[in-house]
Image (cartoon, rainbow, N blue to C red; front, top):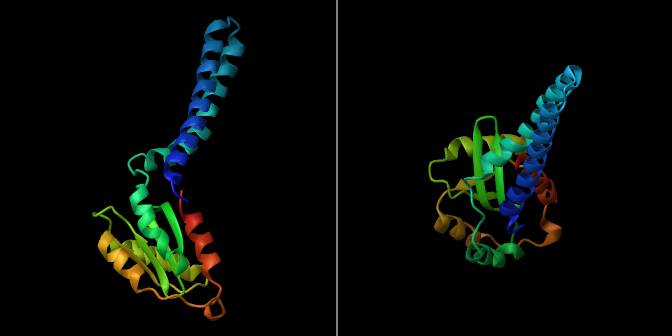
Amino acid sequence: MFGYRAFYKKKQGALVGLFAAAILAQLAARAMTDWESMKNVLTVSAIITVLPMANLASPLLATLKYPSITRDFYEKCRPYEERAQMLYELIITSGDLILPVDAAAIHPTGVYCYCPKKDVDVKKAEKYLNGMLTKWKLDGNARVMTEERTFFKRLESLRLIPEEEQDGSAPHVEELLRNLSI
């Protein structure tokens, strides 16, 4: 979906802000009370409120440095939606990998991802994606490209495959990629 990263940042930012306001309200209430037991309860509840806020804030912090794709890039990809199922603005994460995927083409011949981050370890990313595809009992043929020109060349080379010749795995691959993404 075009604009997902910007939407995600706003949504997560609002939730983190809401939790921060709740924490501040608890601390303010603590400062206003003279009852020692109530102070302890409010302190503990403020500390406990920090935990879910941290769970919301950590993916937000990971996404802050990756901007949304441009409208021009999106419009360049749209003609290929007939040949392959396209996903936009994914941020695929694992324990030791953050892979900002501006566009992913899901085609019966494989999954082709464009990652504008030049310093990404392509082999490691492909190994991770192929491993996850294989775990889901799908063909492990994922490719990560860091050059926009190479990605569009690959999209150009994809041929339209009639639906009756497809293996029906595209919805499962889409679900997997969405699950791996923030």
